[in-house]
Picture (cartoon, rainbow, N blue to C red):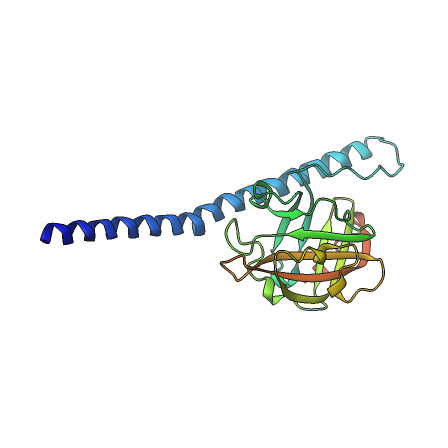
Length: 226
């Protein structure tokens, strides 16, 4: 009997240790890897944009270039949300696959391009992989969401949210989301993340409209000035 009890106890300790190690992996290691991946994506964008500026200064044609295509898994913009901290900035990549979400925020393929008419929709993890949207519930109407593609600053203002819904409610990323309060075509932004904090049975949504744009050469937009 003692042998059985000892064996069961040892099994419980082993299982408990494995659970602790798994939780540590989820909470710590995926976060470390994600932070490194996101920083790499941002560095890649800055190098790309810097190279473009150097070519322009060297005598490239002055005509405005055609908007670059979005390629799956590649970054094309950086997002800033002052409400989440003035050091909060995340890369935005094309596509919403798990491999993409592990490296930053993910643009829903088929939704509008940044700054254009329609609904520019972006998803992000609430927890794990760097916890980019950990503080998503803190967002409020009137908050700024600022993005840049290296040439232009786009400042969106939140109109509604956080709004709770279910994953099957795909209408939230429609060109004119029915529950957003918008009634006509415009230049909108939708942000989505999981709810509850450690689950995925529901989604939290915020909707915003494009409030202003300005050239990167003009400096940072007012929303980013401390």
